Image (cartoon, rainbow, N blue to C red; front, side, top):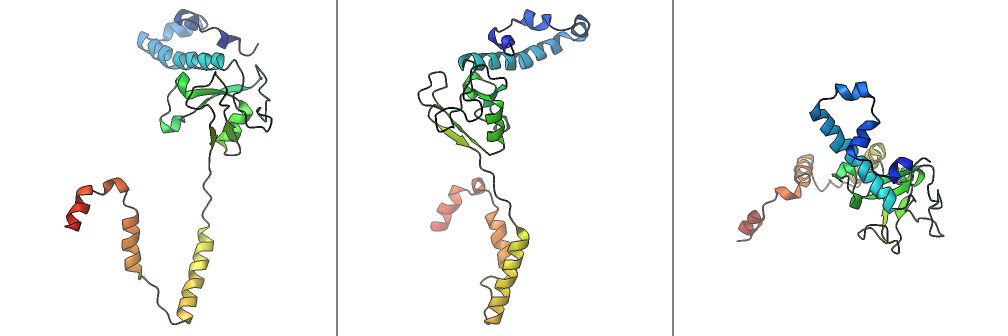
Amino acid sequence: MAYEKYKHIKTKEEFYKEWEHDKLAELTDKLREYIYTNAYNKYVVKCQILQRDKFTCQNTDGEDGRCIICKNAPFYPALTWHHIKAQRNKGEHKVRNGVTLCKGSHQRYEKAKGRLVFSKDSINLPPHIRGHTFKLDVPKAINWKRIRIQMKALRKELKSQGLKPLLNWEEIAILMRWLFIPYYEFDEDDEDDECV
């Protein structure tokens, strides 16, 4: 069976028993410990998540309350674990931060083509995601060429009416610099001083 190695969590000795003896002998104790704590820790967390979720996709995004891709079939051939708080956002490899998904649901979600819906009745899921829906939004690309054309048309229209733009280029540059100052750089004491 495809998930046999995740049904039983191996000890450190069992983990290294599968390694070729020559390759294992080349490793220093420090490197052996590093591999054990990092690779083995991910393996243990994956085992715990798959076992907690009973080797079944937890996505319920279909109209019938089942996954669109795998229909929540146990031991579906392509299961993976998803980080609820993404690794790119400093999400950790912990059981609380993981959930079992079929590969199709996971890929659809990561490409922002699908959503993840978790049942509020599922006792397997961590309490902080029960009953929640997750969806990634892809920002729309800005068509700068179209914006330039529209701005050129606006300037022509203002010129034909004999009107001047509200701001000149220097004032626009000052405004743009001000808009790009991160909000955390504003000092609250500065605001109080200006009001006095």
